[in-house]
Length: 378
Image (cartoon, rainbow, N blue to C red):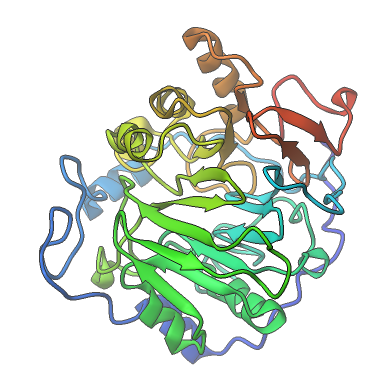
């Protein structure tokens, strides 16, 4: 285990008032519209699976939980080293923290569920607190053209980070149905929200992308939404397929294991890179329907037939009961059980950048192999 140290520098907050916290808790007006196979006209649901757990289940978890101890602080071991440029067809991934990746195509920079706040909570002094710095400082981000937000949970829709990005980069925000109105309440205007399987074309940023626009498609996920109990499942959840520069990257978001992975494969073919969650999974009786464990993630990788998968959703905020090192350790064991090579389902250090070619093969990394543990990142 790394020796605990103090954060290198505080993350600069914007002024945050009581009314901001209350507005964040409220989560916007939600969505009303025609019913569908995952919407009853007022609330969304998972076809064929539970949509969240009851308050009684939550109390049972809190009463019986066996929570492993996490370190108070972990020093990142990788130093960011973004590519100076990418050739058409190349994709670069930089693991920032939790489920936040900088995803770079030729002329297009994308952030997934960006979280730079100290806590994933509507309050600055309560809620799960980060145990490590972001792997890439906010001030060191390249120009951000597109921000993807899968759903409204606090560890995915961090409104303070989104406001900082809006002010500093003026990106396009794409999210799931019902969340655009919430972002607009905070003054974010360049936002679109999508239903499952809906797509949007994002035009090139100035002259940076001669290859043309990117296509963003919201895909199903097996999860739920809420900022507080009374707005439960009033907005949708999902994942994204980003098609740009001749490549396809699938960002699964938060999800339990289900048939939607095979459907993504059927609709899109083999994706070049799949970002799959491997953390926040214990205890299984409580988390199974909403969060995959590493075994489920390997099954999803096989269903997708992805050229390469990369683990997400671990190692920064203690949300559930497993230890900080358990996700990569259990992923290694699950890969071995299923005969999946380590290169086919990878784990990045926080702050690490990896460059992938058109076959999904890693061309390089910004840290040496002797700086890594066999288990992966902490």
